Image (cartoon, rainbow, N blue to C red; front, side, top):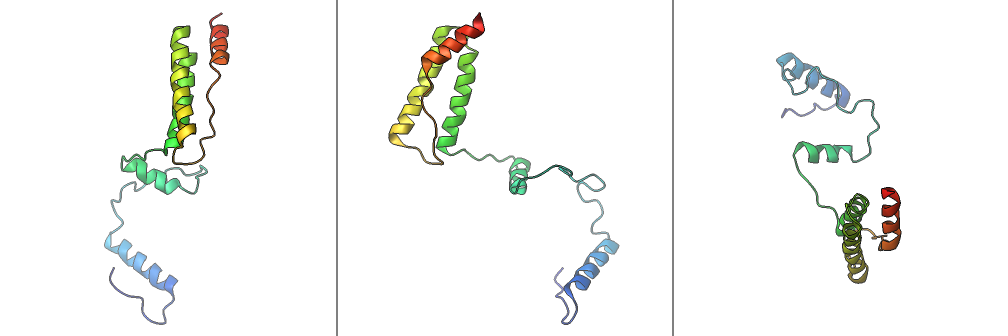
Length: 133
């Protein structure tokens, strides 16, 4: 479509004409997804939905900022500790993530605020014992 809108013609009429002529030429035939419902129809989408969809469709990944990655790792470590086979294993998992948290607090990481404190190892071990009874 290299044609320019004629002077004096309203945009809507010109656009409608361009679409109608393209339809008549069959330029909209056999488009991907033709005849299928729109993906996500009826769902509430956040304002970044199109970026997320593009990243997913292109198979891209975006690394998390270091503070968010550490928060995610801390949550995973807590799950692993709660499911550990032995008390020593649970203690090791929590102590390792606590070392990383302390280092991040001491040196600072880029990204949003960390908002994370080391876990209370004794409290988690106590919970671990309670679950095993």
